[in-house]
Image (tube, rainbow, N blue to C red; front, side, top):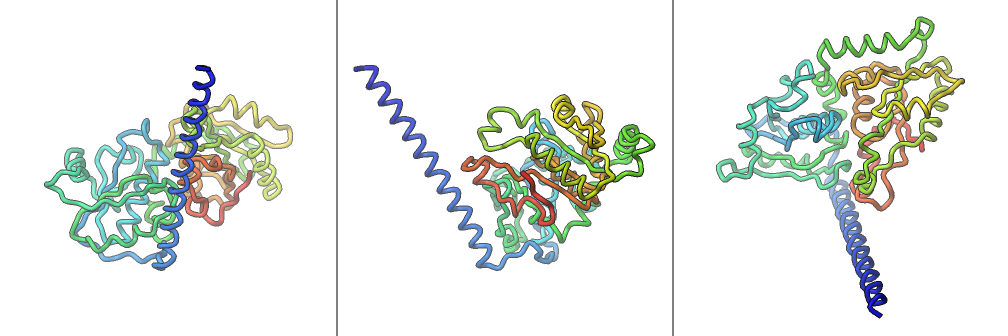
Length: 346
């Protein structure tokens, strides 16, 4: 009897948790639709012209190292900060501890850099620095209300959350962002040297197709539960076939954080595949990918930025993520994340 009662209680608990999760997902989807409808009604466009700069400063919550937030996320922080600032007439401000300052040639042309103590004071909620906050609840969804905050030009504004959509800064800031995201000469030289060492003389005139495979961290259980799906072997096979049909004389250059898996999965007698050395720094790996003629990208912002910062004509991405009805699925809009001319394959 007691065992039956225990099983019944366990069942009811699971049903209750399921109902709560379902209600949460419905609420998030409803909020997402409301924001989308509001944007359409207000006529918001991501091509909105820049406004004259006022006295207000625009800041963003910033992570101090790549260990907590990867290079691709850092790029989105910076690009969206600059894009939203220019469209509203704010002065974008970044902290001197931003990791981007140590790897990029020049970021100061678009922003003001301040010391850590001052930045942390500006971004705090202290009464000495009254401020407005703009939140992004969903990482990969564009919210047009970010173009409507210029009515507080005399006040500092803080962006909180992940603003990971090209619509926050593209196309009106395309040239400025690409110029700011120029890696230091020594990083570019190392990437060029690695690429040169991979290409035998007979392959140097061939079309270069970069292929990025992200596994490693994205295989962890908490990211899988959140809704991330690693790109499978079948996707890379389909992408290689797609590129080979469009560019018959090509060589594939593979960059990955799981090179054993990449080498085991992409062995081919039909295609020329080269594998980058293990343990390249993120900036060297990304720089090398930007040197390709075309790109096959994986999941995540690192791959995204390798495509955006390159001159690749053809870009293929994995469209089999996120997991349906997951938290990530609620936060993700493909049309806000991937550029329209990129091609999705599953």
